[in-house]
Image 1 (cartoon, helix red, strand yellow):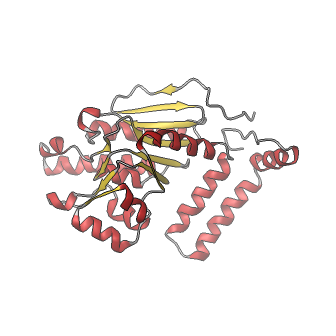
Image 2: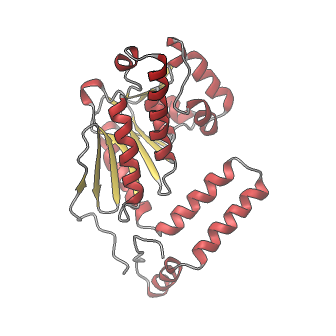
Image 3: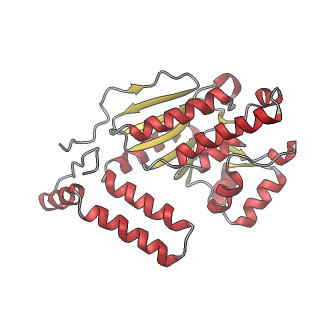
Length: 275
């Protein structure tokens, strides 16, 4: 049965420690939680991120997933270099594989994803943000991919995700220099959707997430699928993906509920599970 979206539902919280899962109503928060090291990404964090992302995908009541941190100083400063420095080359490759799998789990989510960035989003922190559909950041945000300054390259998908988000020449400049840049420049190059004062970011993200969550979950997921599938193909192929996505909506209960609600001048009550 369709149920009205509610923000009053009892929060659902995960038992993990380095990454928390907190859902209230239809909005799930995936929270990086190693505050003592500014959410530096060790194996525990990436392993938990993989599992929590999968949980978010399975949670039928979660319509939107927000990646965030409870810290004002940092979303994540990237890989835990203290841990990495103690690893062999083989162990480092394994740690990178774990990190990529975790990021891919976020990138594969069928539900819309929003990243809320406060403070530092460096290295893997920025690469994780780039796997989200939408990025909102606070005015204290600092971004960067500094890997070349320590003899490596972005290894969490940054060389592929960044030039798909901004012009390739700008992506190359940022990767080749390893330079940090602030929220204003991130907005100017369309890396982020919006810059918000730090004290207003949580509310702005919540409002955006709830706005999306009130819409048809099926339609939003199919729109995301059509966009993502079409990005790496020619226009004609992309249109075929769009037709498939439209047809999936055409035969759905969501569409019928939307039409009924329009006729009855009320808000649609879409079911959590696509029909």
